[in-house]
Each structure stands twice: as structure tokens, then as C-alpha cells.
Length: 584
Ligand code: ASP
Image (cartoon, rainbow, N blue to C red; front, top):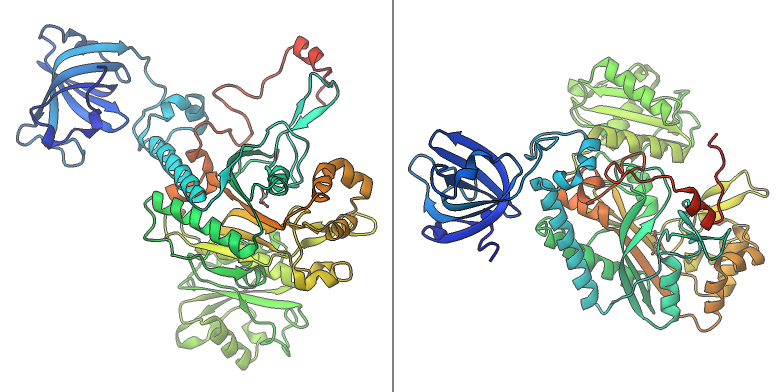
């Protein structure tokens, strides 16, 4: 028997037991006649007392941090006055009878306790050491629990897990593909999947009814705190289902994940909804962080007849009220103004609400009394508050104030509970590509997204007003995932392709297999994908998804552990039929 117990599991109830433990030496204290070891394994730490003078225990003198040992000994209560209430095993210690060194260790390049902040590149270069730290093991386990909960939830709802290929033709998620050269077809390339999108739709045509997969997706995009090249999705597709069915199935899975993470008391039984339009108007974002208020307030009508030149005739005027921020220094207000301008605003109007309700602002003299009163009333502003207003083109006012709202009010990831939100009724197109001739609508989701049935008639005449049957799941201001009802009618698909400038030949070349499949009896279907890295990070209270990924890439897309990406040798290049250009 290699071991009988896990070190960190021992408790007062084990006193008198003979145990065999294996683990790493976390600390070693030499107290004259006795050596105290903290032996660490996955369950935690336990104190081991060794008498190095005793036969078979001499090795205690040589031990160093991170050596791997096996200890046979007896659990005893710690002597009075030495009990450590901060340690789960702090009531007991193990008196060693035998000590075996299983593996020696060089001194680690950084301390492995959980409190020390270590340079991230160093952590990633020695990820195997970093993973020994308690928060990392906790995050890996949390991730496994989330995966399992979601897998169970999907299975219980009648979904079947199907694996889709990694070496495929390009998928239309709109990001840059990672490509893989083909040896057997020189000059040709596979794409790595940006998502299993087309395969899951083919599975629906194939009668699979309800599919899910914990799928690896790859997109060659700039990395950020919430984005890696490779990421995992809980990918879902269902036949004979509408938006309600999808929202229901996904809600069940993510709430099960929250419960598995021990966060069930904070998650509501059902996830609230907001239309995209309301999200943009009230929060200036399609992924509103509803953990805090500071909502954007519509003030355009209030200033309908204003004499204030900066507001007169503006497409939109919106404002936010920052509670108790009336004492912000002038330099901070100037910095906020600069920030607003860098985000596209012509300026930022700020006003402090003074005791008695009067406003203090360089522009207050331009506002009528009723405008001043109406403003405070609409914003619910009271003495001590700061009011910020932006006027101009509506979309700009929303995005500028939405960003300032986050800058000024957003709680840290680990605070404020879990606020899931469905954002529904996204527009089908997010704008016009003016560079195309004629200007062309830019799809907000992939091109297989079904327009809202009520808006189909306006598809060509007023495309930007057309809603889609697409929906996002948001958690604490992070976009957790997207999905949509798909187009299964070839006439509608054809109209969308035409609008996007994808001609019949192009469509056939890029998605021909899907269009072909749809000619053989395509059932209505709809689906979704939940970003697992983001979900786990939020459940773990981590600001960066790298903390919940065992082997992530750095911000620059490299892996300090394996050194990837690396060059390949001339023979491999030849085999693949490739020649490298001089990097310029
Ligand atoms: N494939 C989509 C994505 O990765 C999700 C979906 O529409 O199901 O965003």
C-alpha cells in the first residue's frame, strides 16, 4: 500500500491511527532534537514530527522543500498550547516511525504558498509547480465539477454527447482561422474549428434531435483577460425547438454549474431577460453588469427646448448619477472628460449636486431652472452625488456612458453575487460596411441566424431595423455565450447570403455541404454555446480566465512551458510542400 490516508484529511478523530502518508515537504523546521515537517498532498497539510536520531529517520536532516516523502507514523493529539486553529489538521500531528525519500527536488523558483504574488511568465514556465498551489488546485477541481454538472444536466434533458472533428473546412464565426497544412494534399489546408457550428447543424439534419458537446474551439484573435486562442464551450443544438426551449435547457445547465460551485444561494431559480434594445438604452452595453445600478437615464426630451448650445438639437442626451461622488477632485473630473472624449464624445458635462439641491457645474448657467430640477428628478440625484451627461449621436451616448458606468461602479469579480441575464432580440445586423460597394450589412451573429419572423418583410428595405432570433447569456457583465434559432429555409438563407454579398458560387464553395444537407429535409433547429472558461472564472472569483486553465498561453500567445509556437525543420516543411517567406 503506497498510502493509507491523505495528509490533509486527518482530524482529531484519527488519533491513535497508524497511517501511511505521501506528499511534498511544504516546510521543514529543525528544532534541535526534533524535525517538524509540513507534508502537503492534494487534501492539505499535516504536521509530521520526526526524531532524526531514531533508526530509519536519519533522512529528516537532509529534507528540503518540495522533496517527495513517504511517512509511516501514528496520529496523536498535539500537545497543549500547540494546537493550530487556522489549519484543518491543526489539532493533530503524525509521529513518524519510518521516513522514505521518494524524490529529491531542486529549490523551486518561486514560493508555492498561496499568498505570494509571482510573475506570471515564471508561473507559466513552471506551471507544474504553480499547479501545486492551493488556489490552482481549487480552480481545477471547480472546473471539473462545473463540467460534470453541465454534462449531467444536459444528459438528463435528453441531449446526447457527440464529438465533432478538429480538422475541418473553415467555419463562419467571423474570427481568423488557425490553419493546418495538409501533407497528403500539398498546398491545401484544414481549418481548426472556431466552433462546431456547421457540424451540429448537420447533426440536426441527421436526426440527432438534441446534441451537446464540451467542445474545444480555436480562434486566432488577440488575447485578453477573458480570451484565449483555445477555449471550451458547452455547445448545444436542438431540433423542433424554439428560443424558449433553448433558453430553458441552457438555464438548467448553467444554474446546475453554479450550484455545483456552491454558489446556488446567489443564483435565482430562473434567469431574468432583457431585450438588446433595453440593455443598450439602460446600460449602454449588450452585456450589462446588473450587479449595480447607475443606469443610463434618457434626458433627450427634457432638453427639447434647451438654450444650451451643446445640447440643442442633439440626437440623444443621456446621463448617469454617480452616488456620493460629488467630492471628486477637479483633476478626476478632467480625466473623466478626457476618457469620454477618447471614447468618441464631443465632451462630458458634469454637475455636482450641492446641499439643498443646487447644481455646481461650469455649464449650469446655461440651464433653465426647470431643466435643473427635471434633471435631478430623472436621475434621482441628491446632495453629494455627481451627475454625468453626454449628448450626441445615440449609439455614441450609450457606449460612452456605458463605459464610464463600468469605470466608476463595477465591483470586483468576486463581489456582488451571481447575476445571470438573458439578452434577447439582438439586431440581425450590427451596422453597415461602408467600404463595400454597395454598402453591405454586417451580421451580428453568424449568417445562419434566423431573422425575427415579424421583421422578415423589412429584410432588404430596412435591414438595420430587423431583429434576429439570437440571444446572449450574460453573467456579471461578461458575455457567457450566444446562440440563435437557425435558418432552415433555403429561400431565407439565400436572401441573407445575397445581402451579405455571398454569391451562389461562393456560398456553395464555403457552405455547400450544409446547403446540400438542407435540401434533404431540414428540421427547424436552434442552439447555443456557453463559454466554459469564463463561467468557471466567474464562479471561482477570478479576473482572468488563465487562472482556471491548466496550461494557458500568455497574452502574446506563447507558452513559456513548452516554448510553443516553435519553428519546424526543413524536412517537415518540404513534406508539407511549404516554403517560408523572409519575415518582413
Ligand atoms: N457557434 C456559436 C458561437 O460559437 C454559438 C451558436 O450559435 O450556437 O458563438
